Length: 378
Image (cartoon, rainbow, N blue to C red; front, side, top):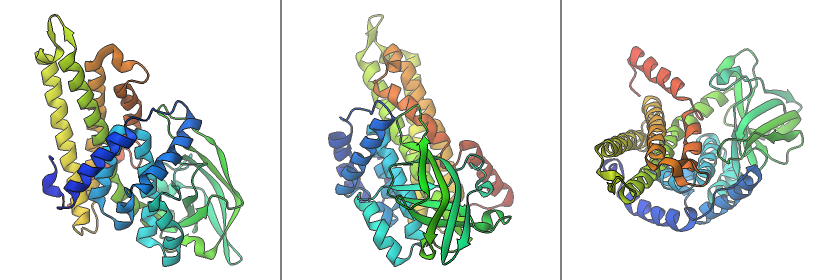
């Protein structure tokens, strides 16, 4: 592999088993046709991935393994990749800040595929500006009362547990936010409706109305939730880039397959110089993206306390490159590539969201520039 220099000895056989699993168990499955089907399929993928042991890297905090999983799975099924992503997003805060009892109750089922997780941070008025969130958590008796609304929450309505971020000290910005563990059956928590993406994906709104949770629902420390959320995203962002690489690799494979078998004007499309130039550029961008992704994961697995800049570079470059590669693949495949059901058509609808979620490309560039100006290289 291009990225072998960044992998540990055990990663290569892991990747080989994973590729075989994805080709055998995931790739043949049809894409869900609507939101209801996506929600059912997400549950089934969770069981399949958990039973196969592919989510254990979340608890182990093996970021390179998580990147390998997401790259292989995303190329086979963007929806199955979303399941991996949300288990990682929902599970990592337990790894970083959970008490032993919280980990036993939730982290173990999350990595075994018995509990579906969700990460509830985004709000209608708080996207990139997380500190602007309006959901509040007020002390009430020996517990807390949550009030507010979250939106664009993956697994909303089907998750078993939500890691919810809420303001506990008004006016303190990022220094006044706390993370809470909120089981789906908590009174006062309701699913407020689905939000339908271009590519089938379980997404929606959550409403908290006098939602009472006990004192031990706090995940980590009071008023330290913003830091916990950013630490989680810091660790997961390279894996978004890995998912982008998986989608791009599948698109490139489809483009090569089509151009070498499709004949026009008496010769295969792959004999035309313009086609070859495009394929060469696609392959180069994919390799560059992979190197940035696995470099960031290698840094974290090697003990780096922060990988903010490396993660931002990996996420922003890989997702933007993947968008270009998938778009080029659609162009090379031609008319068939815009027919519903073709692999590159499905990838075209799926890859776009990666440039936005878990930190839009523009925000990642600001992070990189800020570090450059401040002389920070982490």
